[in-house]
Image (cartoon, rainbow, N blue to C red):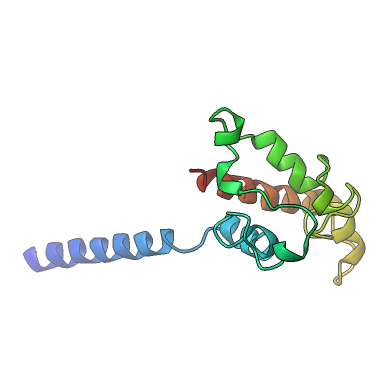
Length: 142
């Protein structure tokens, strides 16, 4: 009985350590950031991405958004910038953001290689991507 208990405890500890290691992997938001933002804003969000040198505007330090907003992370503004409701000159017009179709349900539906997909499903997917990215940006604030 004692051997079974020890084995059970060891198995639980192994499972917990595996879960802990998985938690340290990149989040969905971090993956979104890497895919869509890091080229201009840099891998840590400091505004020093490899493409930033080719732009006519200075890239903001995304780790300072809360600090520059009285200590409060501007969730609505950041969400609006990503989904195109808030215009940012470097991102392009509200209708053609730098990310193209990645954060636009209408464009994803038009480009769907598998045929028509339920628009509501696509909109949920886009909102999820944006929220994950917003949560990641909130997590890197200094």
